[in-house]
Length: 189
Image (cartoon, rainbow, N blue to C red; front, side, top):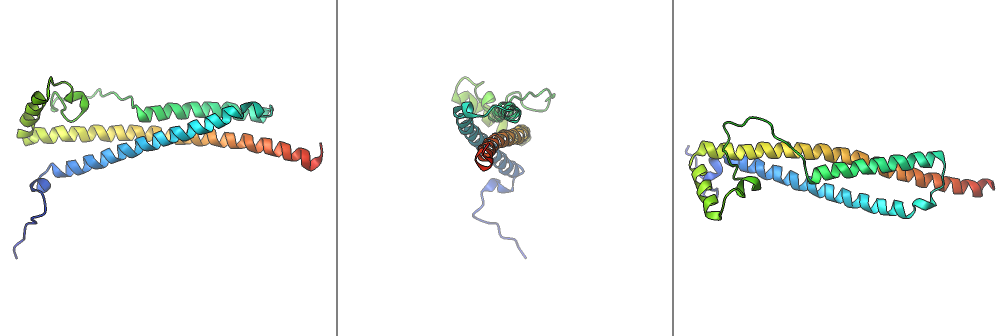
């Protein structure tokens, strides 16, 4: 029984670099979704902070509310800090990379090292002539994206915890004020 080759598939689908392109696409999608979540969370936190600051002077002063306000501002500050680390990650790479190309032509930091598009195209052509160098270049990009995604997801999880803490403390303040007001009407004090 002979196998028929599909006429629909591209010639590079069976190469050893095709899986890397699929993984790269997946990692880039994760990167985009993480950034979208961070921007959305930052916007929601901003709306809640504006709401909180507008009504801040209406808060009844008691020990519980003061503690909740302190918790709110600390949690909001840490949420903003972690969201900033998601949006603009601060990463260092101190590992030795003897086998990697001098210039990684897949990242903007490597691309902007060339004087013009022709020089970049020539370098890219030269690197892609050697399949091992091409494989190393794209696998190093994949490795870097994986580390960036892990870093961003760690800080996004932290931001979500701090965001939840801030919103919960704000809710406790609102509940405290509502109960204090209801207590006055229920018990005529």
